[in-house]
Length: 157
Image 1: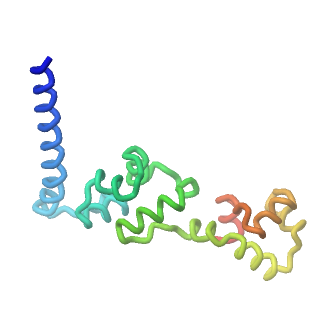
Image 2: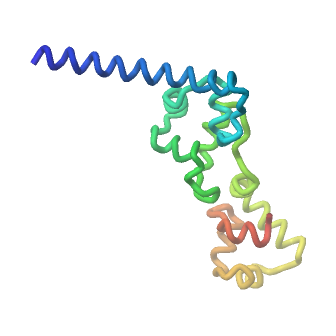
């Protein structure tokens, strides 16, 4: 039993060491080969430029490894990305990750009211144009909820 535990500890230490070596060597090899990080996403580039590992990011932001990887590999569509997660990542990496859509969502009631006023359109007419109920438009105006990505693209982009 004791031998099994020692072997397990050695294997874990070896794997950790190999992972650290890999994290350090990959950027160095890219630089030596004259290759840029152009194949990387904005998030990956920012992380590498800051000299942070994925583990560092997850520790600093409180995100799970799996969740962060989905963001770094751009597996989550823009409209489904969490604003709070993007803010945390922006703070840690020092880059603005909020897109126009996310900025719109944060101030959507103001955008909706301005759009309706500028176009002199009633709640009922705007609801018809958007294919939603009057109550939904009223909720947008109050800031209870925000228009969908599709409506943003159609009217506010």
